[in-house]
Amino acid sequence: MKHELTIGVLGLQGAFAKHMVMLSKLDVSTMLIRYPEELDQCDGLIIPGGESTTMSILIHEMKIRDKLLEYNRPIFGTCAGAILMAAGSNDPRVTTLNRVPVRATRNAWGRQVESFLAPVNLSFDEKPFNAVFIRAPKLVNPRPEVQILGRLENETVLVQHDNVILATFHPELTDDTRIHTYFLKLIKN
Image (cartoon, rainbow, N blue to C red; front, side, top):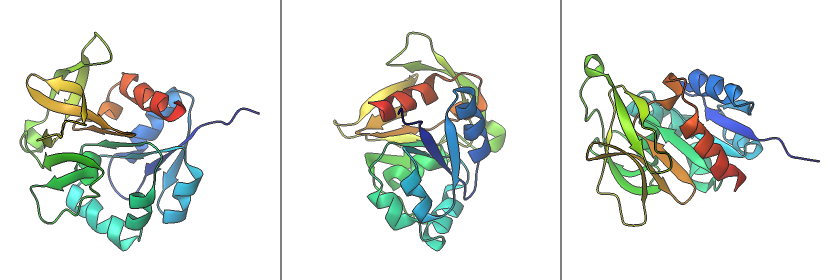
């Protein structure tokens, strides 16, 4: 019997519902994650965008931090989720999970009113990805073992380290499924 994938989407705060809609377009089962024990039921996890300081506090208060540190299945962090998965942040209020050896600079592209759409060049597809950047972080000083999957001009905006993917933008706010599909392939492999 073939196992159907179930992707958990951390639902403490942020744009979790949009990721669930995107995954349903790809005919993948999703599960909203709010408690540590729920992670055991997922083949992969998405940590969505939101407000990274708030998410950092909630991860601690909901006692999910230790389980996230132990979780060895694929993880996809977008925007604030990318900040949380990085090795560090420019904001001391954010306690990162140190899963990807790269530093995150919060709100590096400006405030919410300075949000924008821009073409990201992908390493795994010739066609650029029209990405939505909202108060987006920058990923800086990636270690050599971090694979760069996407760039906006000279800036690194999409990376992979082992089975963790980080995007500084919001692929769930587009109709383009390529980045979520890439994440699903990572889980299946």
